[in-house]
Image (tube, rainbow, N blue to C red; front, side, top):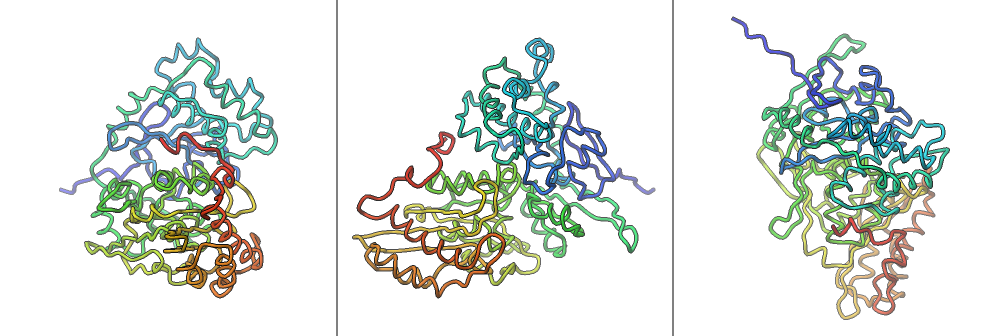
Length: 516
């Protein structure tokens, strides 16, 4: 007798209940599903590439301790199957997401976040407002849970992934402060945790959906392994399948380039690759760890990297994207590789049961080409803790201050002894077809007294390291001049006499949550 099994389904918590979804394309975005299937049109489509924030929603997941963690993400580039086992909150949910709905109704007609926007005139055309409200709600819940109240600068950083073209940000920030003054309305976390616990399945998700192509109908598979061993076996068995992490890049391939990505292997359910921990003298960052978690760990050990962290994309992108994905992508203008390269990071590569290591500096072979073998993937990034004993700096140069692609990004680490340069790392993105170190400039500095004369020699030597290109972000001459100037900035900040204090060169004040 033939056993009939139900078709694999996606199950997640939404609108106060567990939702089951079948037969949707594996690249159906959360935004499209909300608007077209649920008629939840409060979530807007703006840029459709994770830049404007009009589509912001909040996802909830259980951490290793079983506690609910909330994070804002861009619904426009998140594929629907990635919601499996999670909770989805949208602007329509705010009135219902309380532990006492009647008390909330008595306290205010709107949720405090929404009421504050009204009182502070934070909305004009209103198109961006739902996205702002969801980012603000995520902040509201986080600070209420921690018993803290954000500074205006913290609010600005938390809202940096949301764009408003008419009201401006002053009244929106006013609302962000005002919402904490209104009667509190809190999410019933216990109810959400209970619902998510029922969704915790030990088996890997293997979701299959039909895709119509010019050649006919085809079945596409969305694999979501639960362990590194399962991921390694799948990758070896299906080397042509596309690895998917935060979808911050692949999502654009689908939305903007209309590419057919075929079968997908999703790393977002591999708990053992989401860890960030110290192991045997290293900071071990699993490839599935979010950019936010990874950068927070780096900044705790090198606070001078705060500027690069807070200017790396936006909170919704950092919550979804992964450090492993940013490294494996191999973009010559990626912001993580220059910093990691300056810290002597190694990449941990896995193919089936076999694991090997190599310096990140050797991983990139040519433009968008790396040393990965067929069936192999980046399992982790490892940074020696000794590297944090050096003076570490990260510099991002871009046209727009927040949420912009770098014209160039530099990671630098210097160690001085007796007034001379004992070790030096100068790594640049945006200066060549790959991220690479400035070998000639480093050689001009090594062993030399740390003086302005040494800086000048290194600046001249750098002309042998790079032949930058000219594109819409910067000219070749500008890139070379800025790259040279950043060596002088490093000297100004680390020289023995009258070094510039961090506050003299950073646009950010010391952030309380960085040291937390």
